[in-house]
Image (cartoon, rainbow, N blue to C red; front, side, top):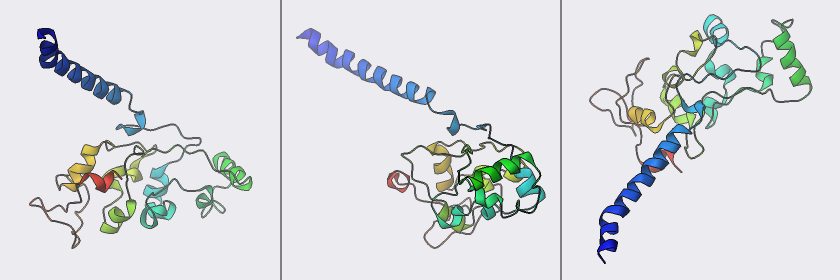
Length: 198
């Protein structure tokens, strides 16, 4: 009986703690690179946000139309490129590759940079509707030749903002009636589990 008692008091808690630590370490170390700061996959053709959004002052939503209208901002369809490139830079080999994909009715294989795990629910509409600048989460893309992830895509980054603890790089939007303004002057968002995990 002493062996069973000793196992229940010492062995079982140690086993549970060991398994828990193993699960956390394996989960942390096997998390895909796409959730980390600095993630910048090589794209099928070079695309400069600095040229488009910076030098030419094209607003984010001109190409990423889904940000205000849907949950996801989405990687633009090839047709979006030809709002302009049916007239300009048509001799570029990269534009010609896009044109060939458009003519063949194929999607272009862009690699998504900002992505969240499947168990996370995120909707751009309330964030954009509140007036939060795209740069708050995506960084100063208008200065980037190659876009990279600048915000850690872990839960802590979202909660920091939703709790009003985030240092904003752009002017703080005025809170809506359904939001609380905390002492820092930053509006807050919901922090309940089901707000982001549905």
